[in-house]
Length: 621
Image 1 (cartoon, helix red, strand yellow):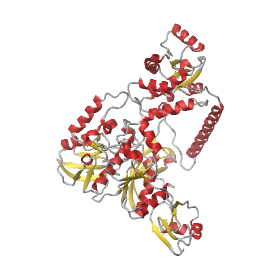
Image 2: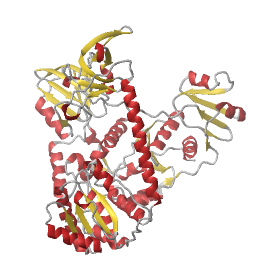
Image 3: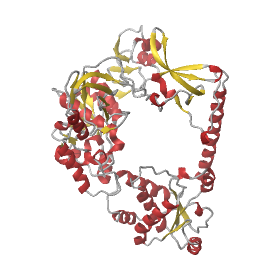
Image 4: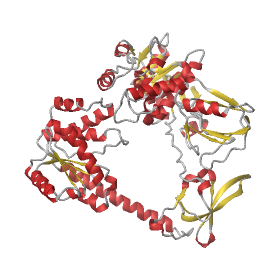
């Protein structure tokens, strides 16, 4: 119903607000389509869902999109209507000055040291070979840079300090385009900070004494912009598509948004559409016949789509040639889109760099199998000359792969340095091998499904713990949990209380607090009278986890021991007896734990499971 509510509001409201707040980016996209259809100048902000003090490397793309959108907004002399997902607006945004850009043009004189200093302050990463947005490489009289918001990186060639060539280049081949460019506008990779401002933010981060997180400006700098940022939404008229009480409640309960809650509580909420209704289009011809007395508009990307639906000769239809995908109906009109939402398929990135390939290297083509890399050659196809990678197969047969399609080949990696046999073209040997592997993968998938089905029938211990006890344990950590940590803990404890077997993967980079999350589960299990086993692949990890758990848990009366090859026979005997008697709450150990008898085992935690061998994984199951 939201799409109809939004359309009716946009069409009938006398004076548009500056911001329309929607639930997510999909609704913002729909709003943009409707605004374009109605001739309303509009733009959107991305769905920036980071919580306060999250590591922003995980949200790099959304943050870049947000800053670019803000820059676009500031450049409009007549401000457009903004569609924004609600979570984006919980944050303060950088002031206009911090979104400055620098334009370099052909024949400009550039001070390399000054440019290097500025790009560092602006958050660019200095690398040997540029591979992604926000990277720059200084190599003598060549500067490669991939500015934020650009589709391709650019190579600047200098004569002394003067730019004598500006050309985009290909990431996969690292080869420059032939066409020269006149200029390049560089947007900050973080913000347009001065060296002094960057140092001030770094000092703030250091003074905050944050434990367990990456503490550089790329990870946390956005959260320390308070004296340099503004509340973008304040003093702007805004309307919410619907009542977002639950979203607001959950966010302010788990997080520390930078915008006061009262702002959202005071906003107007659109009235639900009274005339327009959303329309599901399955058979356009039947719909048009059924509503032929109404004013009918058909939205189509092109005339071919109209012909496919048999609509090209129907009278009294208004045809709008556009990619809009919304359809709505009222008592007087029907707007019918015959377009399907197009899923953007990301082109798979090549994993091989041509400069690293030497003649005679073994490679694998995803369709034809193992071959030898021969050389780069040129061939004329349909009147155009292109570069190709020449691959040699058995019998001196060759396959030419366009250099812009390198994602279909990869290096061959052999076990123990053994040499592979080249595949033969036309025999289908590689296709048969792929079919065999695919068949085995389906068999493995079937085994996994059967195992999961069997586990679903098992009755697990019911873990019941007082919320106050968990909160007390969390308060003793010495730092605030992130929203993701709190959500993971809540989901684990709810599932452990369901009497069903819990099987969860906890994922996060080193230092992101996975062990802290796991310890909450250990506390819940111990308070319910059950024991925990933590299995790790190495004695070093065993020792590290043992000391971490002992330090945090023993103050709560939870006993911890370990079993690995560094434990004496006497200590091991005592630990085994206590486990079997149910007197020990937690045991940490390597594969030495396999086969150990534990009286009331309620939780098994496996760290770095990928480092265990196949037979060890079978025992863990």
